Image (cartoon, rainbow, N blue to C red; front, top):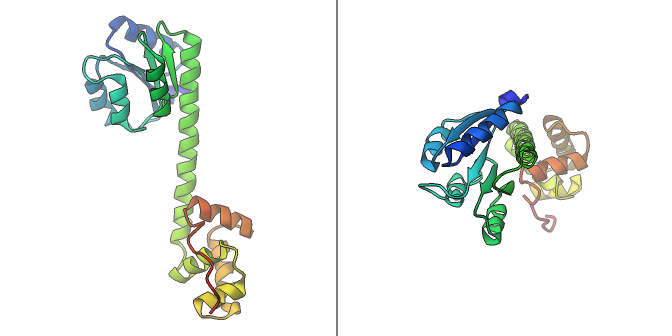
Length: 211
């Protein structure tokens, strides 16, 4: 992915600030779209499908920057800029997930660094989502009985214990377990446990007394 694939939204009601930031970001290779109000940005953002981050002024003519942050609900990374910052506002914005909170006039190096961090975070988040999607596809290959076996195996039960839980014999559980490992594309119990944990199955079954 190149910079030209990445979109930076700028929301600021000051025309001169928008123009200056657009020039800076375009010179750095980013695509830029600027808006003078929160509502104008929201109308455009809802149709966006590419990796993007938001450079956002705190004081806007309609919604405030913090109100817009709440409205977006972490839909994309935000870098706040303001000429009226105070510590409580800064802390609140960062706690709500903002990448950074920069005072105006914004230093070019600080803004570009923060935007780089924003896109790095996006890349990490997308990688996690891709991995989870792949895990869900593999889980979908399992039969209901294989999912039961997997849920018990990842809690540390031995094949004999799983067989007792499910009312079958150890040989059958060994066969199910082998198919689970193959379908989940893992080669060890430790890998299977990690995959199950990522899929939210780590605590799917609690130990019971053997039947």
